[in-house]
Amino acid sequence: MSKRDCQQLPNERNVDVAIIGAGPAGLTAAYLLTKHGKSVAIIEQDETCVGGISRTVEHEGYRFDIGGHRFFSKSQQVVDLWDEILPDDFIQRPRMSRIYYEGKFYSYPLRAFEALGNLGIWRSAACMASYLRYKLFPITEVKSFEDWTTNQFGRRLYSIFFKTYTEKVWGMPCDEMSADWAAQRIKGLSLWSAVIDGLKRSMGLNKAPNDGQAAKTLLETFRYPRLGPGMMWDAARDKIVAAGGTIIMGHGLDQLASHANGGWRMSAADKDGNTIVIKANDVISSAPMRELAKRLHPLPASALQASNLKYRDFLTVALKIKSDDLFPDNWIYIHDDKVQVGRVQNFRSWSPEMVPDAGVACVGLEYFCFENDGLWSSCDDDLVELAKKEMAILGLCDPEDVIGGAVVRQEKAYPVYDEAYAANVDAMRAELEEKYPTLHLVGRNGMHRYNNQDHAMMTAMLTAENILAGKRLYDTWCVNEDAEYHEAGDEGDEKVMPTRESGYEPVSDDQAAALNSLMPVPERIRDDKAGRDSDGSDKNPDRKVA
Image (cartoon, rainbow, N blue to C red; front, side, top):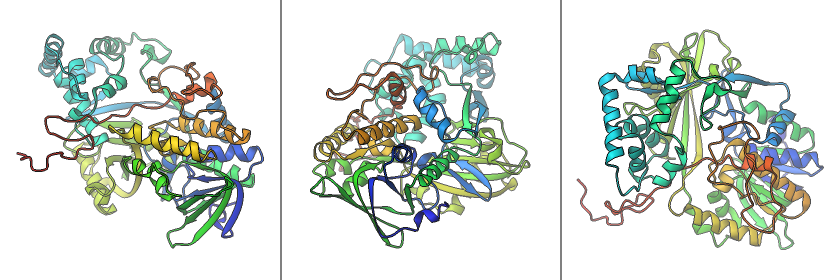
């Protein structure tokens, strides 16, 4: 059945489970529920693509990701599900990424001799002097990311390898980000260990596995669908439809109303205002909590708290460039403040099959922004011209070699962890769980958690178990927020994660491995000197600013 056929539906449908959003969480839940004989209907706002932020966009035969999505999980249960849905189309790809700074490329992780050569002897000496200065005379009152990182590495290395890129991604100054986040994100990394590891790497002394790197470093290879991550979710969609499920494209949630008997009436509309109605016993929502709260009827008491949740948005400018290939990296981090781009993806390095013409390279320039700011609101032609200009500034291509471009905007790509986010999430979660036991929140935006694909899937897998059991067996919010970065170690490596609350079945070691993939996100601190609140608003608007 084609994507178009999925939309040819009557105006009203009765199912066991209605699902909001056809991203990894929504599709995982639907796939598992249909396997067990449940009838499901999914609404998806996008008119053509399933997969959410993990989708693959196709433009004139060229495929590109929204970000980049490696298929790695410490949960064998998740890996097995990937293999079940897409058994024959994974390829193993080498992982290579570098940092760009002032016209030079730095291997990531660090190679000491290369870094020394790029920085030059005098700048390297200045970096070491800065490091020693802050080791001898550290900042005593450590409040911010800037304070913590400066104490750890010195101000010069902080400004080169941390400040610019971090501020591009999160849209706030490093001196307003919490020191706690820095300690969590860069936990266990020191300058001396990096130099020693870099020396070993430079001299070829490291041995397999993982090139002798410490446990917290990144994988050398990864699995990837040959036509991009969207291939996985297209296959899941097709299997759901083949099992009798319904996927309604181009429809966004209009209202979700609870019945007195515990059931639900969900209405969704397309861009022309045409409405469909789905009645269901259970509802699974991967919609942003802020948007869900506005559409619930009756309006929840926690709607005000939910309305204060914030998001960071994201857009990709994909360029087709006359070239066999521009660079071998999967992606390059741009630590240079002369350009706005934060990262450049090379889609042929993700998979050669993403780019159909051997004489054309396809790259994606990633810009981090807020919805309706200058970048977000720019027209596509202007964004393509900006990308061409910045590629030239970076020395990555001649603008004359660019033969086409496309822009994809991704709303709410990253949940913002401000001072009040946890209380706001907890208020809505507590109210919905008390009043509506048949309404289930899953996924990154559905739970306002900056999680990986496997974490989103595990929340859906446990939710499916809860629905099949007719009660909440598992606490899907049971996440170890002190977990290491998810790409450290081996699959199935993490074993322990206690449930957050009593009254639930304990998750297995394997389930915990996926749930532990939650990634750290910066929280904003209050800037007492400026008199600003955690959202950046000025508490003293009459204060003079130079």
